[in-house]
Amino acid sequence: MTKQIVCISQHYWDDRWFRKHHFMSRFARDGYRIAFVEPSITLVKKAPEGKEHLAQHDLFDVKVHQKDENIFILKPPRALPLWNYPVFSKLAFDYFAKKVQKKLQELGFSKFILWDYIPLWVDSLKHFDYSRLVFDIADNLPEFYKANKLKYWNVKRACDKLATMSDLVLVSASSLYDQFLPKTRQRNIHIAPNGFDMDRFRQSNGEVPEELKNVKKPIVGFIGTIFPFLDFDLINYVVDNNKDKTFVFVGGCDGAVKEHWMPITAKPNVLWLGRRAPQTIPSYIRLFDVCLNPFRVDSISEAVNPLKAFEYVAAEKPVVSVRMLSLEREKIAQYIEFANDYQEFDLKLNRILAERKKPKVDEHILLSYTWEEIYQKVHEEVERLLVQ
Image (cartoon, rainbow, N blue to C red; front, top):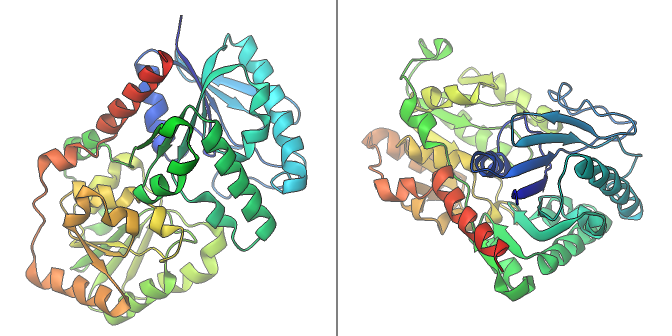
């Protein structure tokens, strides 16, 4: 019988790729049929900025697009307002689940592995014809809502319940492992860290991006979305203290932080390039003299293993980072300079530039963080799950 996975995702397939894309694309390559269920938006809310072309949802039906022989993209219908609030969320997800399950049945999906990234679906999973349940956790999700106690406790309840229900729990960070181990069934929980695409870095042709050809050196660089979890005070501090350096930021900006970000982009030693195609990212990193990981230090960041840190190390670039508990426990931590405060961050940045040393990364350590290597370990756990 054909192996099948239904993946409930909080990201669109054709958006920037995250762990779910890397895992599901490889499962499809290896013969699994994949139904990738994208997120929805409400009837009254506009699509997120820059994602208007992705958020093309029908009012009442599930739209299906077949990407290739084994990958089907499902777009749930639009939802009623306030569907993420505790009072309404179960009604909304029951509605989604019934609609999606009907479409899955039409596509020939049955007794599939249900792979969930959105814990608020938990009370509605009973509507799915699944045989195994996987919960993949890449963030300390309740902490995203700590400003709203009602939402916080609803998401925490959902995470705890889903971890208890699941046949397999995957976590991206050691602190998440510590948090969810007591809640998992038969302790079937495994760390599957974030990684990087080795082929992209090895196959890059070394071409210099046009917009960086005449940029003043040294270049201090950052790759990734400008979003609320960055420490904008820290960025301001190091930019203002290093006017003789050019700070280059490559990535889009979350609309929620524009008021913090736009004044930084106006500084004379800052160059913000916006989004760039994923395959071009190595050519930008190659020109950086030092790379930044300026997260805001809090309960969210301690459970994060940022993709950008792995890409910096893969390019053998020096990295200065804030303290991040889970990242410091990874094998690549030995190639990253961690700072306790703003002053130390600035000090380490300048020391790296003065010493002009590139880290020599152990090839075996590097290979262990490729998406292919991480996927192979996840694939083994899934295959083991299927024969239980």
